[in-house]
Image 1 (cartoon, rainbow over the protein chains, first blue to last red):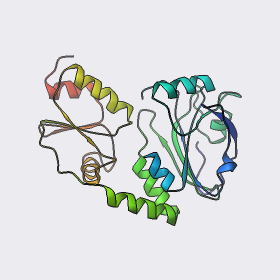
Image 2 (cartoon, each protein chain N blue to C red):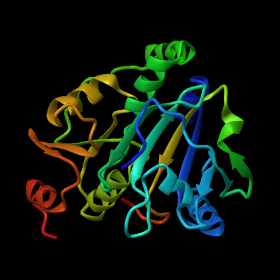
Image 3 (cartoon, rainbow over the protein chains, first blue to last red):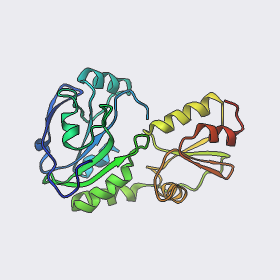
Image 4 (cartoon, helix red, strand yellow):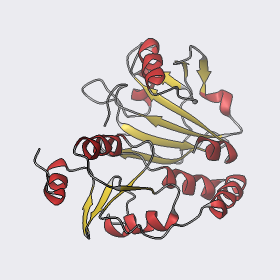
Length: 44
Length: 198
């Protein structure tokens, strides 16, 4: 089950496709849209 | 679209369980992606699991999380794996949780030019990015079908028309073929309505 609204989004640090380390907490003060998708190269 | 997210003080992040080189190659193949695609590759799907969107087959759900400035989850939506997320829902959500985003959205909407319904025999309501639209476009071109495309993200009246046909959803593509409306990319129905043999 996906997380529910109203709670704090868990922090994470991951590497982007450009090789940049990205931490969620680094965007505090901005809104964030996190979109997960099944796999690269899949059209649908 | 990304400019509008920017204007709405919003960072867009993509996430999948692919490796960094794989995401990079994919982004390059699409002509580059200007927001970060995050690699949740190792330990496999660790973040996806935390967010409850790791599927049993090891891939992630097609899901959207909207976080406000404090990092609180304000909107969560898990789509059917075949369905495309709808940016308009995101814009409306952001406008609802952030007054500055609301202003930017209102300013954007004021710039849109609603177009009259095209009179062409075959009209495809779509978005620039939707993969199902891309596939439909390929089929239409392959069979040399004359058609007109309407981008519903740029035409609020067209978007309203689509919502009217698709139970309130901004599903894409939607076809209007000589008055016959087909919601979604259904190759068999489409071929039948167009009178083409697959």
